[in-house]
Figure 1 (cartoon, rainbow, N blue to C red):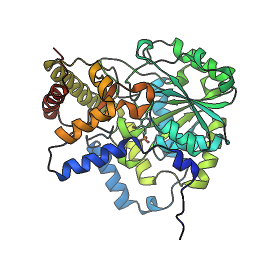
Figure 2 (figure 1 turned 180 degrees about the horizontal axis):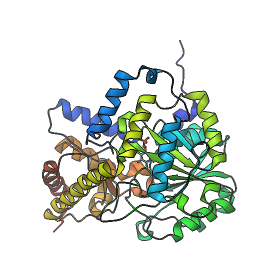
Figure 3 (figure 1 turned 120 degrees about the vertical axis):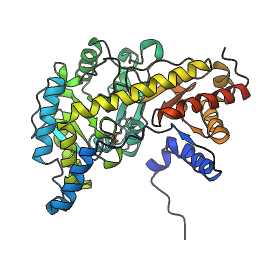
Amino acid sequence: MKKILPSKKLEQLPAYLFSRINKLKLEAYKKNLDVIDLSMGNPDIPPDKEIIERLCDTVINHPRTHRYPQAKGMPKFRSTVSEWFLKRFGVKLDPEKEILALVGSKEGVAHLCMAFLDEGDYTLIPNPSYPVYYNATILAGGKPYLFNIEQKDKYLPDFGKIPQKIINRAKIIFLNYPNNPTTAVVEDEKFFKEAISFAKKNNLILCYDNAYSEITFDGYVAPSILQYEGAKDVALEFHSFSKTFSMAGWRVGFVVGSEYIISHLEKFKSFVDYGVATFIQLSAVKALLDYERIVKEVRNIYQKRRDIMIKEFKKIGYIVDIPKATMYLWCKLPQEITKNIGSLKFAEKLLVDKGVAVAPGAGFGSNAEGYIRLALVTANNRFHDTALRFDEVFKELGVRLK
Ligand SMILES: Cc1ncc(COP(=O)(O)O)c(C=O)c1O
């Protein structure tokens, strides 16, 4: 029998960023290496006990919650999101038309592309960025246009540099702050106004990914793009329970914003999924109701880890930027490493030789070569060892830090 080939769209996609690292990680475990896994933004903190109790109680005592869920999100879920959004961001949302439950925000982003892109339509994607924007565009038959975001500009885009002839053929622009992988945050309101006006002028859906809005430090408060005038005409904002409530495996999130865009996303989703299990939706409601208590603790944990890791790196002479948000450190590699082997080879060596798994910058886009991303998803007492193992690899590669 002839080999049945996958679709050209699927073939076109590069191997998932983490598949190479995951493969090496498995080999490292097999070799009994003491692996420190800082590769994925996969929280190691368990969800709050009361959320878990709510889940167990619902699953055991409310058999109706095992039936098909309401795909757009049950009324209780949507009304709780709307109350939380008003309290947190001061933005009023219509629970009927401006909120949609998602099986995680990744699902929503991917399906948004499929709902709106025709063959050859462009999306505008920051380079570097969370890889799903690129991959989902390809799977939907679209064309990604990558625009660079640079450290010297605090990783904010210069919309003026995107060619007008591309913009004219584009339907979606993706923006994400607090940013994965760079950890950048927006501190100047002007950015939001510019982004909204750029999307309006060019008839673009502004897809604002706010997955890390609650993982912020040192008093920084991340805004919602919907706080800014005119946003609801063009923008969708994606939120996730994965990071905020350490519920990554539960697969729940939501999207809010433009009624028009949401109605089409909802229509598309009705053909491919049934939404989030009712018992998960009810647990997510509990999470939002207890938001302040839970998030305070989560923030403290990541902020403490951030400070420990940075201090440990400093001890070996490796200086990295202090992020105001996210669960990551975005670390510039010493020049000789970038020049001689690059971020992927460095990450592979670190993992194979020393058992430390990190994400190579190159996996987030060509403009992120020379960086690696560390996810702070391990216990505080592992950061000392992490720094020592970095030190060993740096020395083996002839890097002089001090
Ligand atoms: C920027 C960004 N958006 C979305 C997601 C996915 O979130 P979810 O688990 O809700 O699908 C991630 C996960 O790493 C992310 O980094």
